[in-house]
Length: 224
Image (cartoon, rainbow, N blue to C red; front, side, top):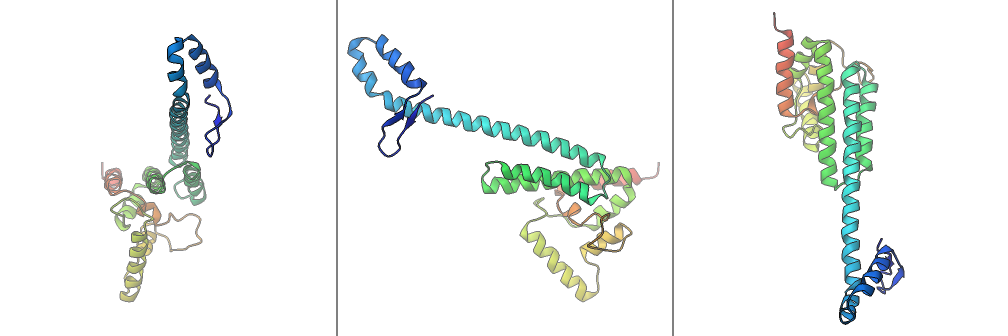
């Protein structure tokens, strides 16, 4: 549209539609105004090129957001329909969403927030699927597992805190959070297990979601 300008010399190296339109406009202008209009040509070119670039960037961002929303909705639906104990299927759905976010042109801090929000959403969907399948087991797991107050289960603070808690529990002979979750599932803790839901199913949850899921699970197990 606005052609191509050498950034070092400021000279136009390739004309565009702007040059044609501006030339036609200049021919139609009164002769006494043409010199002044011609002197503004390059300033108008630069302003127009910047405005067009911003519009294109905004359209690209909107397209990416629409793509992410579509994929995330589909993957959350997959998680809701899948067996909550199928770690491979869950990991594949969660990773598909993370891969899409990695392709987006995001500020690093915004990317971290988006990834944390996606992990929280997938953890919530998985726990809802577990509540539908086995509400008592879900209630026990939700009561046993910790949750990060900021909803970011993978923050360094949470990881270090869980590690310190694990060491302290080992010294005192108490159960670590992982062992508590394993007990809630009625299973031995096994890092190679393909069916045991890992601890991050709880730690990725936002505190508000955790409370709501607890209530949902408890209501499902309450005597009728």
